[in-house]
Image 1: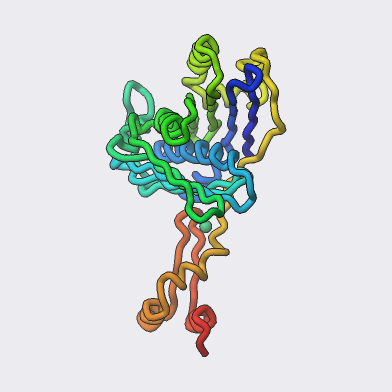
Image 2: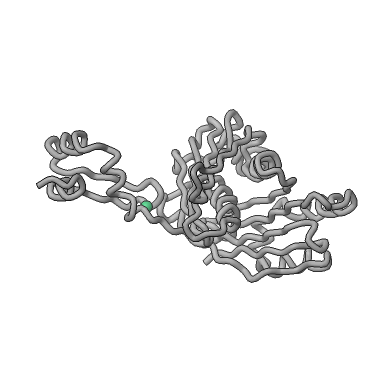
Length: 287
Ligand SMILES: [Zn+2]
């Protein structure tokens, strides 16, 4: 299982999170047969999603994160609930490798012509929706810009996925958020520390989240909280009846008469559900 380790530093003037999402990204690779480039992009987005999830308070709070940059990867969709439960998919999971300056070109795959959007449903009348124009398509910078502009908290974000011949060797990130009373000097210190995380996935392949937090932030008057788990969980089974209902009785019956059954495949986990005539009768309450 993955892990989110959080702390406050400078006596509460900044928040830090170190995320290890290696297992979560490996589950996404297994479910979607992701190419290494698709795994790098979706893995970064799943890590951002895990962070959003970790900030939700009630077990029923939910979120969705969409990154739509117009690139060959297509849209990235991540969703989840409070408690570190995330899932996600990309429109083109088999995308071939693109390189830029010797590194996987995630920005080129995602594209830069579009938005990062987050919807948080906290069970209130209206969900909170925020979006921010993409700058690099590399996801970390874009997520930082989203946190800074849409949520009003200046943030720095490093995200990374290290892929090997056998899936993902390490994945995760470091996120720092500055509170309003932080000093200029402390901001400069944090900017300096963040330069260590350009290769965060390689670092996570060698050190645990605890070691990273302790080594880079432990001396900054840090108060470390109990770790939270991160896992890839899909709850599509609970939603399928609702999907049939939203299809409408007429449409559902038209599909049944044409194909004998209605099949729905979940984009997030690949599970397939079939509904026959008796199921449709039950859902729409007729006999
Ligand atoms: Zn599913």
